[in-house]
Amino acid sequence: MGHDAMTGFFTISLRRFYPHWKLILAVMLLLSGMVQWHRSEAVSLRGGTNPHITWYVKTAQKAVALTFDDGPWKSSTPKILHILTSNHAVATFFVVGQQVVRNPQIVRQEIRDKMEVGNHTYSHINLARHTLREDVADLNKANHVIKEATGITPTLLRTPYGTYNRTVLEAARSAHLHMVMWSWTEDTRDWSNPGVQTIVSRVLSHIQPGDIVLFHDGGSNRQQTIEALPIILKDLRLRGYRFVTVSQLMKMQ
Ligand SMILES: [Zn+2]
Image (tube, rainbow, N blue to C red; front, top):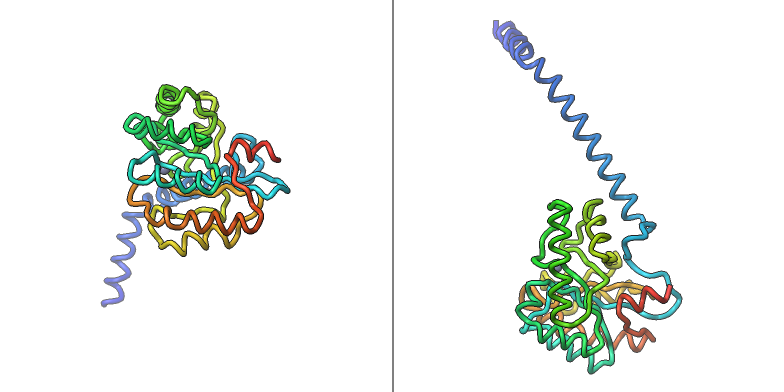
């Protein structure tokens, strides 16, 4: 009796949902196909063969490029500049246009201290989520305020959150910017304040000639970055490394 009732229930349920199951299956297959396609696109873009993105530079010279995103900030950038200059090191600052408008004197100091200044968008937007027209407008606006503050138009772009797609690549081309990411082993994730020693060992344990190291000089309290930097500079100097800007590093390949 119970068994018959159960069978009846399932028959009715299956009859009721059967057409939907077909639809659901079709949608699932379609989605899985799209995911696969996206993955293969990501792999082909990340494969190191894309001439429009630099992750690191193949070089025999013992040189690395330190990079700082999200500045300039009054609370941290001048301290980082002081550490770099007193250690005779240069670095590349990927600045946010809005911050440049707030602190033009700091970005001018970066240039005076022989640092390179790159574009990190005007308003720190996720470029991959905007249209081509919006991306180009944002990148050009950032280029414009950097030029206004320093007299120099940047040639390099680092995208916020490290995201990109074909639209972003097209927007970068249109704004005459070359995209620079960072070496896979050289992401300090200093923005999460993991501790000075963690930042130091993340940089030092895998570093190789031609690497591009990712730090941040803004966003929140960067005290750990400020404390880790002199340790990193001294250790790498002892190992024979020199510190160059991303553009200088790209000429060493
Ligand atoms: Zn950023």
